[in-house]
Amino acid sequence: MPADRVRQRRGLAPLALRLVILTLALFFFGLAIRRAGLELSRSEVPLDWKSVRWSYWVLSVVFGALALMPPCLAWQAILRDFGQSVHWANSMYAYFLGHFGKYVPGKAMAVLLRVGELHRHGVMVRPAIVSVFIETLTCIAAGAILGAVLIQWIAVPRWLQLSALAGIPWALLVLWPRPFRWIVGRIARSRIGSMPASVVQAIDARLMGRTVAWSLLGWLLQGTSLWFVLQSLGGLHSESAIGSAMGSVIGLGGWHTWLVCIASMSLGALAGFLSMLPGGALARELASIWILLSIVPEPIALIATVVVRITSIIAELSMIALSKWIQYRHGV
Image (tube, rainbow, N blue to C red; front, side, top):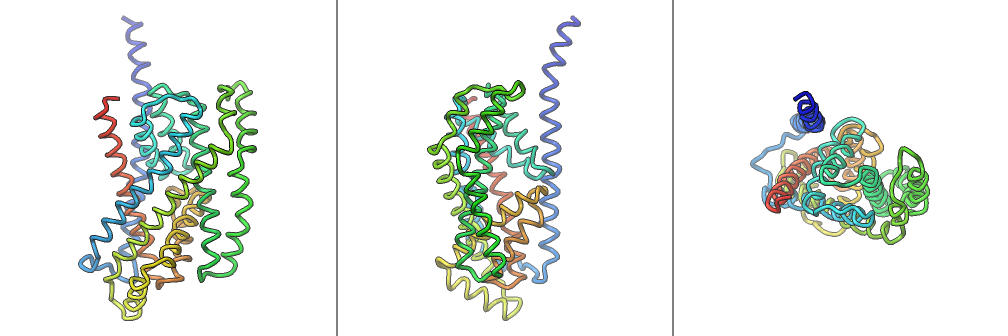
């Protein structure tokens, strides 16, 4: 009987740990939602919900959800290259569940949630951790380069353009497979980081190039989500100057506005990632606002960045629910 109790306690320990981690993530996630609501209520331009073009806002949520799929597919491909066999429904749920973790200070919780969920399905912990870092860093670096190039054709302060250009060599270094392979190789040979040699060998130009391509598609869709947010706010006419400016944005509705939105999302995400703050709070918004100011007044830029954050949260929740339903339907 004592032995049975010991085994029962050992079985409950991982479950308890997962519940603690998920509860902590949900707590900070709730704080992020509350902060977004407070920022929206303090805006200089009160948001008249009757003036919101809801059809455009719904499209922003749809494209925000679609934007999460390319990096998910990139990560699944990395896992396959590392020789880790896991049902695609399980890895899909693990990926979206991990989005909760980015709202916790330090962002380590995102890795714990994603890797912990995969480990339940037999995936080795160390290769899974390496796959998360490669996908995340590649996605951020690809977005940094894309945003740095686009911002050269956007009317922002010159120092911001030069700063973005200065970051390109560092981003390219992240995308170069040799440094990744060297670092992972050193870790793989250590006692703590021991992992199959196939993991190191899989990190090549093909893997990095494919991950970059998926990441760029994700950023294009993220920018499209913000573009639809701006369109949804086109009915705000509380001030004549703002109404005129928003009218011009809706009238443009073309390449330049779309490219500004892409740069705003990609460079905003870079700033949020580097800040290490929960969900990239403040840093993400400041960078996004600076870029949006090239096409809209400051009050609208602030509202748009807050609304697109709420849109992203809803999109993430939707994909978590969808992936969990798919997982249930496949019985895995």
